[in-house]
Image (cartoon, rainbow over all chains, first blue to last red; front, side, top):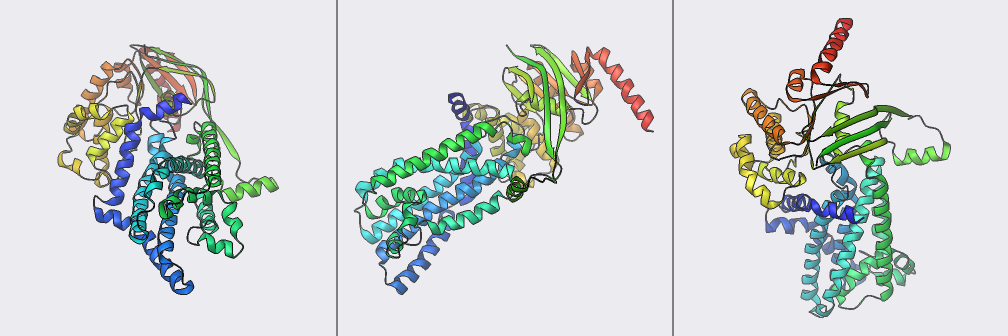
Length: 260
Length: 252
């Protein structure tokens, strides 16, 4: 394990420069590029807020940051899963030439997605400040460890989907369907209170992704601490995912090349 | 100390007739236990014995599909042996599938950095040699362009220039003695020889029997994944040439 981590560290210049290049390509070397890449969540938030506020008379000040925060989180999760699925194929040419540790290819994808998450979350913070004032300042530092937790979660997810995609060519298809279901099963665009009113609270209670989302979103937008149980569920989920991912990677990483 | 050691190494590929199995088929098959996509075994290498110490230059010859490139990839640590022991001491540098592994959206300069990092360079060492790599490739201002627009010859030049800019301990070479157009080939050959002189152990695959006999002190003749003959170049190469000649005559 230590030797493996050392080998990842030893080729840090390689994967780090790839991450930097991915980001440069994504944002096309401009500020507009960054705004452009956030167009989707911002547009979706606008549409949803218009619908909710006009149809159900909900409070924009609460809803806006909540939906944007949810979409930012979901963007990271789905990018980790979907781009992660392609990560090993993306690095295939390198894999065929150099025996670098397999873990760096999902890492490349997740660091890119993580950077994007940071940008999206800073927009969420700015929106919260604009709509609700600065009462979240005290809670902001609690988000830092959670972001690290998310990074580990994203890497584990990307590693698992990446390996699955090497073995099963229809992984991407299954993932798209699965992610769509999870998207609606997690209180991202549907406020949690609404779920509880309709007796669907269990969807949030038994969904580890909802707990993970709570630990990032709640302190950011309301300045309130999430319940301890959310932290607990989030930690256990990430730990489990990480163990499964490292175990699977350990088992398969030398044989992956035979299936590509 | 650099050393290459293979003891009784075998490598078997398990291939499927119709590519990878989709997950849905995998589930269905688990339920009904009927497969129309059987696994074929390809025994790419069988009981390979190889030992090379510092100063050794090993040439690997054999017909197409004999397992030469597979052997190199196994030495490089890309394929794990199915059975047997593989020990390689010293930093490995490999020259094969050269034109693969470029980031198509990045320009030439960036790709020089990426590939150098993968070969174990640091930003500091890259800075010190990036100019000489660029100069050797003769690509000039094309280096500012995304690699996507390069011709295959330009890609090969760039790849060759990067890969030969290192001082390897264990060098694995697969048929790259002729890179690029004629003018570049002479230059490339000189650079290649220069690098080979510095390398401690070399294992090279080539169909060019002349270069093998010039460069190597030890030759392995692979035939269908097994070692047919081992020895000094002047012993093995004539036998191999004779065999190939006979085979060609039979085919005619």
